[in-house]
Amino acid sequence: MQLLPGLQRREIARFRRRNDADAYVRVLRQRASGVQYVVVFDPVLDPSALVIQQPSTSI
Image 1 (cartoon, rainbow, N blue to C red):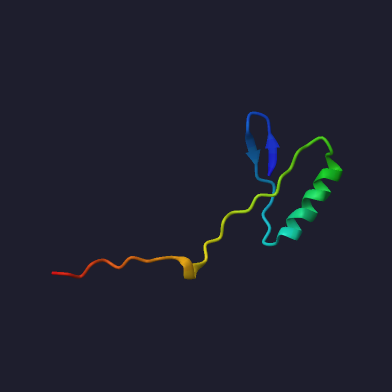
Image 2 (spheres, rainbow, N blue to C red):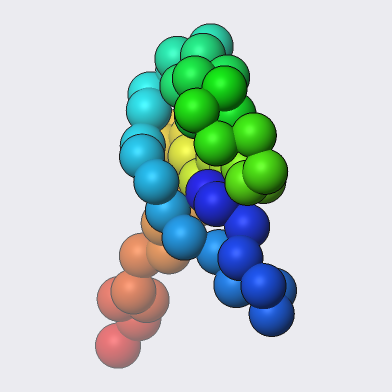
């Protein structure tokens, strides 16, 4: 993400691996040294950790 004035952010790219994202940020920083970039990850939920509630079947 590119950090913008006024606490705003702009998504630049998405990657599956952190090392790919870090390498891309290094290239961006070399091209535009005055711009701030940060690597951000979306949380991935573990499907086995999800609790699915079944509707009650009591009559």
